[in-house]
Length: 111
Length: 113
Image (cartoon, rainbow over all chains, first blue to last red):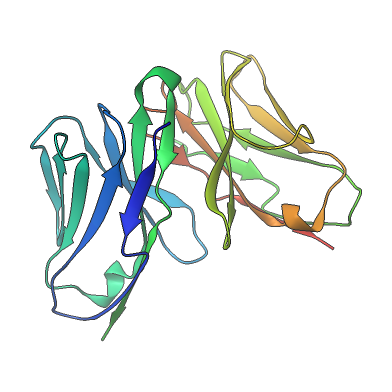
């Protein structure tokens, strides 16, 4: 059974700092997604990573995938308050046509 | 292109009642998934429908059911509501499988009193 673990689950940081959120998963997978959820809102897709070594970047967010280590990272560079949200990773469970979700990382960025 | 729509947005029910939630996917999307989100349990997969057939089901009791129509619109039903069913119910659509990029609706906030 595929398990997805995110850490940390909660992160409070100052604007201007860098930090990384980690997403570990337990079995092989072809695809990994990062989603963002603003407080009181729905989820929005950020990135899909399809192969080992894949890197995607948008603004201050960069996601990468290491399929051998079964690890994805979401790196935040020079954080700004607008990035405060909960970030989820989700992994494709190959034979089951469904995504397995991490618990989410609640990120608070203080001005 | 219109996004995923869910109705109603808010709902208040009492224990023992039943409720039906509706989801209209993005045009052309054939897979519809439903999730329950609570502060304690996080995001939990309920079920996924494709071509009017339930293709996957999460670990929820039989009180939770759903269906999909020929136009891909989907409904979920919860019977004999319990206090613990209070949650945000999210619908997501994707092109062919729930492992494709999912596009989420705004959710239905259900409160059970």
